[in-house]
Amino acid sequence: MEILPDFHFNPLVELHALELHRKMGFDRVVALSEFDILRAARLRQLMDLPGQDVGSAVAFRDKLRMKRLLDGAGVRVAPYAPVSHLDDLLGFVEQHGYPVVVKPRRGGGSMGVHVLRDRDGLTALLAAHRDLGTDDGAQLLVEKYIEHELFHVDGIITDGQPLLMWPSTQGDTSCLDIMRGRALHSCLLDADDPLLEPLREITRSALAALPVPGTFMFHAEVFRDAEGLLVFNEVASRMGGGMIEHVLQLGFGITLPEVYVRSLAANDVPLIPAAPERIAGLSLFPPRPGTLLEIPDTCPVPGISAYHRHAEAGTVLKPALMSVEKIGSVLATGATRADVETSLAEALDWFERSTVIRADGEPTARAH
Image (tube, rainbow, N blue to C red):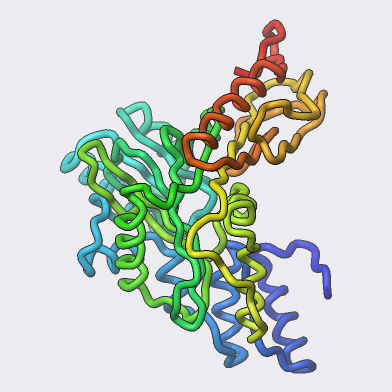
């Protein structure tokens, strides 16, 4: 093991990996982070190793490339367009109207995602993206905003065969809620949920439209719009973030990244049940600006399997920049989705009543 400072986005890391490869001769390059997917693919190409190649990595990392492949294969997606300069964005808004979503083509964790509802939102975006005014332009994507319930589908495919593909619902919360200071929750679907197979089917169709590697984990997002139609958002070739790994551990009794790495190493993998042994879910409690005065140590809510405090009293908090930032979190289990969602709702109410944040220049206030 070698620990390298300044790891992310540092090309010297890749050069060092190549030097080690010449000495040792690696068999695999394993990437578990969203921001290492393309880097790992480039190294495999340089080392002539198997695994996800550059073409596949680009299709998963570049949202414009992904949308074009999905759209071309007949997978339902929201209207979209690339945005390099202001005229691209104005033309899209003129055609589709507000609200729209603008996001980096190669982002992650909902960083840099803007929902524009009017001209004020447009002005804020332009202030945040000076690259829209450069000759080279920005690397952005715009989509028509869809009022939706958000689902995610998580799983793994090994040697071309799916070992796990199970949907969860985020209900009335979204990945952008964390940045707005609202809690985010997620829960595995029941085995008899009528949306289980439709969500799997649209995910299978999306993966079939992309140049997938033989063995990979995936985290897909699917909208259900106001008319009940499923609209595919995007998919990553990695483990889902925000404690989804722990929900799958509770539900299926496996650690998905372990299954992935053992598969790459041609080792035996644990048997994954066809359906969850129990329903599990999560809730993330985000920061909001101010000084954290009180935060509880333990959670008394029935059905909560684990509670974690991610900040200490006295910490000066800022708004979240990513969809997985949190000052507290819970995992819940139960016999049904309804049981788990009840526990998550009670835990959120308890956390907001038990946590005290003082905004700058304001009297002490509870977290909510």
